[in-house]
Length: 389
Image 1 (cartoon, rainbow, N blue to C red):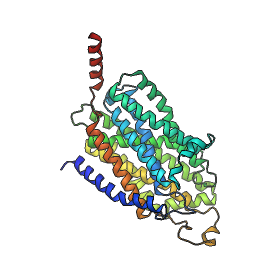
Image 2: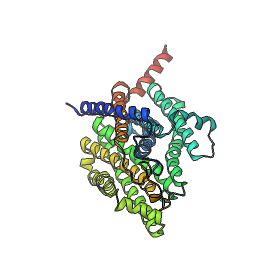
Image 3: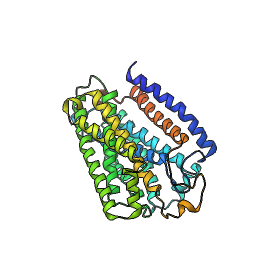
Image 4: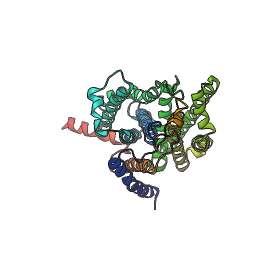
């Protein structure tokens, strides 16, 4: 049994497990979730950040083929666009399920204020999604279209905006000192590009064409990019945490300590740093392993796992530190607590969304002309035949 079939089966099982979570969420609202009046955001917000980052980063990398026509990356543009589209859908589904009244999403479009960062993000993601869909269709049907080039040029700053806006949304929340960092909007586009590179390592390394002569070079360049951005990520972590500790603002210090030494230490040190950062760096700096489909692909998967946990380590600690210490004892109740770990229903929904995203990628890679490097030549040949006729 090959890897694609195994992953397909696992994705279907994840969707089946997620069906219960979706039913519970739609039937019972947020009662089955572990967050509440104090911890208002949970796993789904973290996964929204994770999937949105992959989407923006994958689109950026698609331009290497479709806009800049870099020979080494020829044939990867449509794969990257497909990853970006399904990742964006997964991100928006995650955050939509987090809403208290999902049916009121239209209010953001018709009654929202453009001065609101949240409203700007909604419109930004809407435009980005439409641009993704249009550019993917054009790249398949008419890759030489001037409209496609215009959309890709427009999409680059838009992808930077939608990824940076997430950091801005958190950063302007002055009551949460853990997020109130000036560099946060700058970090998120970098993290998005790193997530996109890791996703492409998985797509090309584990599911790419075996007969592609550029495959080895593609994996090597993506590996170098992943290693470089891995060090950048470590630098950002060091600057953020060191400034927080030296600044000695109690709420901020408590949040950092919760990540480094508190309830989230294992997810930070073991999964985010060791498994998701240091191990991939150690492997991918070796050209022989970085050019190997298996090694590069699985290291890309570990980087993605690390980024998923990193998003959780951004969201959870900031909310589990009380703004007022007296709140921890003033009121009691199942949803009046600062201790948060995702419930079974939250995990099930996330598993289902992840399964749908992976299955969509596999179906698209089989049914859509995403890997046809010669599609441009075929289109040009058809145009010449029509002109001759």
